[in-house]
Image (cartoon, rainbow, N blue to C red; front, top):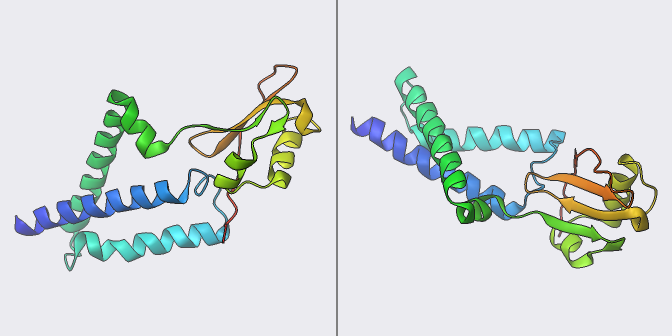
Length: 165
């Protein structure tokens, strides 16, 4: 029983750590997976596997860790619904990148979004210039919403955050 409890506690710690790390990295970090991002995710999962199950590589150990992850995920979803403030802490809030044709440079800089990436998103949504955009919003899940001056809400696309040094 001590081994199962150890797996549950370790899995919980790893789960919370990864949520925190992804939250610190920013909302757009996982919006689009490149080859290097996919490799990163695979290596992270491999790196934390031993931290979750330790030397217990049995079927029961794996099922215990997976069950703990499913339960933690369910609890987290219910907490986000019950407590909007908790959801904001975990997921963040949407960020306005363009408002009434004006680029919110500080918001773009904080989120690692270049003007070229803004222009690409604008073109993909059927507009040709920043001035035509009423609002461009980076959503909490890394998607971008564009509302042009014709008040049509265009489809949502994901944008990959640039690595800032």
